Image (tube, rainbow, N blue to C red):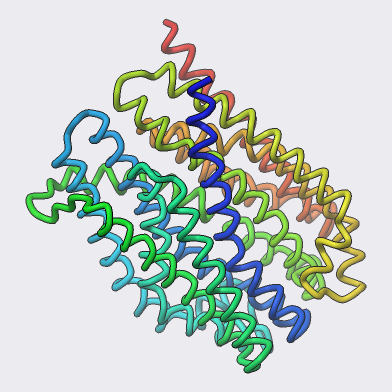
Length: 430
């Protein structure tokens, strides 16, 4: 009973935090779609993976540091834990400094590579330029949130995200609906939300008087953090790899109409995916803690709780969206033609969500216990499988083959995750 209590003490705040993080893109889409119409909604949907890459980079580094911090704490290595926090801060700062000029100089080629052209390219570029100027705060904001859970206060990460989301909503309303700043206003609002989340997080670290060491940091520690970081980075960015591949494929087989239709679909499925990721990431501190103590049976119990709860949440939200589909799609201000088509194909996407919860629970368990290679196989294997399916199915089925490819890749990865997990348990028994 105590284990269940601890599980939900970490998982519920994490789910709320991830759901609120999803509001950054969704709120932008809501305000822009209702203010500027389908073109703005399509442009921000196609351009958003660049923003998501920046935020996933922060999440990956922050989670990589948090996992190592928790393991060292569990092993009573307090100085090494303090070095984990110090090195994570340095890595977050360094990545922000490096990525900013890259985005500012490569913005147009990147947007063209994502499939934007003409009016959509101009709208997407206006958005990304301002996102680029706020890169450092976005990386710091997303990177420090995972540490809040691992520092022993899961709720402070939710508070940081709530405040960030509120700032984003208020600035979106003012800049888009009141001052009519369009794409520029949406980007500035997103950055301001992350600035607020960063300020709350850094104030908490200072208030807790958490020890931070920047000296005598071994290179091996940096390697461990980055090896773990590749998994949560990939997990955070995976929906956007899907977004990129599907948008490019949709342009080829369905034109601008298909891209526009995929925008509200991606927002809906992305929200569900974030809730599932909130469950898997929320249980990470407990899994890493028990793993660090050598109590692997308890870490496996936490994984099973995560898997079962993920399946329940995935099915619950799938049923809700099927029930209230027209209301949910209508939030984004889509035209009647777009709404009708989205309602027709939405069940295909929702079915895949029920399987995604299984694979995400396994992935989180793997990287929380330093089984990085298995996590990589599942995370990046999904993108490979999707790419292969997109080369085959749309040729035979047209745009419907594009939508089917997403669902099938999610089912296949769920099956792969169980196979890899079974291999681990069989070896242990032997």
